[in-house]
Every structure is written in C-alpha cells, then in structure tokens.
Figure 1 (cartoon, rainbow, N blue to C red):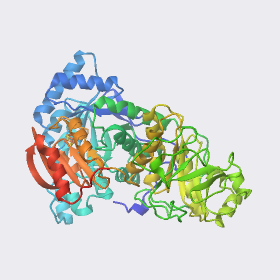
Figure 2: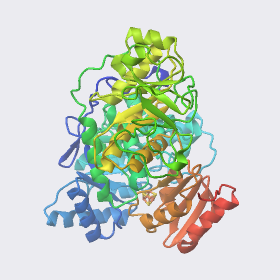
Figure 3: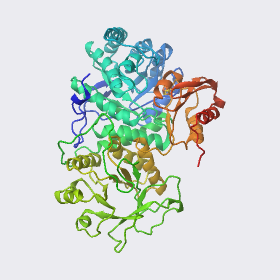
Figure 4: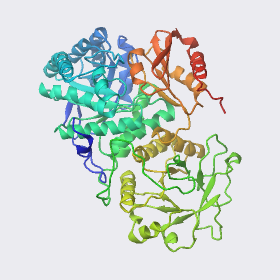
Length: 628
Ligand code: SF4
C-alpha cells in the first residue's frame, strides 16, 4: 500500500461541495454512483426463511423510501429461499433490487448471486472463516499463498456475478478482519483498507468491476478516517468504485440518530458516499427518514457561493489530531470541549443533570436552573450597556465593538465568521490572548466555511480557543439534531473546536442542551453518558433486541465512562463489538453470553438472568457507579 503521506486528497475540494465522481454500478433497476442520487437502503430483521414476513418487511422498507433491501443470507437454505422472497414480491408487482448479506459462507454467496441483484461479502471472513484472535506470523510467502486461496474461492463468485449481472459489495467492518490482516496491520484503518484492497485487486485482476465498497465502524472517528483513507488509496491506484456508507451498531433513539448523522454527515459533506444505510436498533423502516434527511440536507449545499480557499495549511484527514489552542477560562488548552447553549429567545431548561460550562443569555440576570450555580453567562454587550463583566459573566462582542475597543481587557467572547478574518482583526488578536472565538456561519456550506476558518487561523499563527456556533429554525427536534450533528461532526472528528454552541429557539431548551452533549459524545470529544453499541438486528438475531437494549440502558445508562455492546448474535457480534468494555451477545435461542473487553466471561446463561448478571459483572470488575 502507498504510504499515507503520499496519498492524494480524498475529495475534490475542502472548500467547495462536490460529489465524488464514481463509476456507475447497476443493481437491478437501480444505479449506484455515476450521476445517480445517493441511494437509500436498509436491511430486514425477520428470519430469512420466513418468506411472507421478509417480503412484507421489504415492502415496508421500500414504502418508507428504501431503494434496495438487504436480507441476511447466512447459509445455503437462506440463499435458496431468496428466490421465494423475490417471487412473493414479484407477485405483488414489486421489482426493487434485493441484496444478500453473506459473511462466512462462499457457497451461500454463489447461490445468492444467481437469485438477487447484489451480494455483500465481508473480506474479513468470506474466505478466511471466523477470526481466531490468534497471533499469527505472516511472512510474504504465506501471505501470497493466502491470497491465492482467496482468489480460488472468489473467482467462481465473480464468474457467476458476471453471468447474471449481479453486483458485489465488498464490505469490511471494524473488528471483523482476517487473522492475516490483523497480523500485518492490527485492527487499524490501514488494516481495514488493506482488507478491502486485497479483494478489489482480485476483482480487477479477474476483470470484474460491478463493485460497491464499504468500511463501517461504530466509532465515528475510525469510520470517517478509514473511509477517507480507502478513497485516497483507491484513487492512487486509479479506481473509482462507488461507496456505501454507514455507522455500524449506532444504537437507537436520538443517540443512534445523532451518531449516524455525525459519521455519515461528515463523509457526505465532502461529497463521499453513493448509497447509505442508517443502522438503528429499531424497526428498519425507521431508518429511512433519517437517511433521507441526511442525504437531502447535505446535497442541498450543491452550487453554493464560493468560499475563499486557504493554501499551505497542514491537516491530517486520516487520523485524529486535536488543534492546539491556548486556554481562556474553561475553554481551549486541551480542556474538555465546552458546552455553551445559546438560550437567547428560548429560556433555560427547568433543570437537568448535565450542566453546560456557559450559556449565552439575553441579559446578565436571565434565569438559570438552581443547580447551575457556577455556569458562566455570556452576555451580548449590545443591549446591555453598563453591564460590568465578571468571572461569572463575560461580554459577548461583535467584531465592530471589539475593534472599537469599547470593553477593555479581560476574558471576552468574540462572535465572528470566516469573512471577518481580515488583517485588522488578525493584528488585534495577535496581541490579545484573552478572547474565546465564537465561530458562527450563515453560509450554505457552513461546515466547509468553518473548516476554512481553522485553516486560516493556523496560517495566521493564532491559537485562540474556538467554540463552534450554529443556529437552526427547525421546530421538529429530530430534524434539528440531525442537522446540527451533520454540520459540526466533521469538524469535531478532525480535532477542530474547543466547544459547541447551538441555537434552536423553536425546540425545547432541554432538547437543545442534550443535543450539545449528544453531538460531542458521538464525535468522541466528550463522554457524558454510557456509550451503547447495539446492532440493528437481522435474520441472525437471537433475542428481542429493542426490548433488551431498553432494559440494559435503563440499568446502566449512567455509567458515562463505559461502552456497552448489545449484539444480536455470536457469529458477527464478538468481532464487531470492537472496542466495547462489556458485551451482551446472543449465544443461542434464549441464551446470552457476557464479555469483558471481548473476552468471554459468562457463557450461555438464560436470557431472563442476563441483565442482572451484566450489572453484577460490572460491579465485580470495579466499574460500577451508583446512579445520580
Ligand atoms: S451482530 Fe449478528 S444479529 Fe446483530 S446485525 Fe450483526 S449479524 Fe445481525
């Protein structure tokens, strides 16, 4: 593989929204890539042997906006039954494309390739079987022999796909890499990319090009940096295959939606992605409105007004690096990203366990909840003439007032946007270290404009802390949350921003506050609650995932330093819970196994006892905290 430093940039421009140019791959009547819109899809959770239930769920997915539907295909029986599902749908006048989701079974892939329009294989386990988690020594000779073996298993599938016009998705997941890749690269972005590239090169060698690529992870930072690396690596080898995007095991409810919006939104923002699936631990049709909003919201940036490009900055799009800033009060200097809800025009939440660092309020005496003592107020100078700044109340200045020097020295907040970075202001900031910058944007592509701001600040040698500010008029809380997550996720994942300040006067103040914490957690810069990594379920699921997830959340939702995985099956669940501290994994009908750091601790206990035993395990391990 090329060295990361030698790779081309992963997108056409960091300042101008443009969709990546990908070749078109036909999946039945649906084109992916080329000039097609970003396609929406989901996956069934029914047993793939239950023809009527699966066909009915496929239909609900399509009625909700899905354009193709994936079906669990774990073995020969399920692969053969795809024919019945197709026939059932045909009888109902439906011909949307179906995708067979195959993991460990090349024979199932062969049978599926004759029956449906697309087959998904996982390069981590298609030819290598289940990962053994063993230390293996792979010299060049052994590596070459393994590749030859993979080609032998892959070639018949490629031949069948060519014959039937079937497309292939090569889909790698964080945590399910082959022993061969693990031995060379570990479970790293480079490993996931290498895993895909091995298969891609074999496809090309066999003149097969109907390929869609995906690399998914539950960790948004890993997911975004790895997909970028994949695109750059493909580009370096002259490949332009379309991309399928998704955050795996994103969870449910607003946390799952925000996490998906951060990861998927960050990639869509740079024009990457030709089809998306939002994975929620909910009914699959609930995923489609989320996917549609993300697609439509980000693609609405096309044709935006130009953003003055910045040149000569240094930037690491393939690995996390926090921007170095100096501290001003609670902001910057490597401190935890601050939360600063803009409460102007909407009042404060009545109470809340989560406390922000500061709030933007209309006046210095604006009401705040009683348990918010010590929360700083940022007060606009305009309209509050005569207000005397204190440690507890900082003046919020616009650029004109700041340059007119009407407030003197001491910690202050300067509200500005990219276009304000003119020589006079830059000169003044060079001599004034006590200012927090509140970075607003009204640009149609605000994400790119705010990114340009950080590059320009770096070029000017300024290290002031920057709080990202975005405003929304949405009255539907879910829409506001998805947009805020999609707008700011990319910047936070790239280490830009010492805090977050959102304004949404039409949503309840509690939603506004919680969204700050949700976005920062989804972007992995501030953890304020347990991180649940729960799979969306599929035909392999061994228990009621939604109900179980609710039960586990109710008992452990206050353990903010822990990641707890709830996975429907043992086949993929163990690998894919990747970096979870604890795992609750379906081990058989009515049976659950518990894991700690991916090590099996309690084997196949009855489901009815499993949540209590998980809590006991957390207590025995010293990770339990009393709620409250
Ligand atoms: S962990 Fe198992 S049950 Fe859950 S989505 Fe993955 S394969 Fe399906």
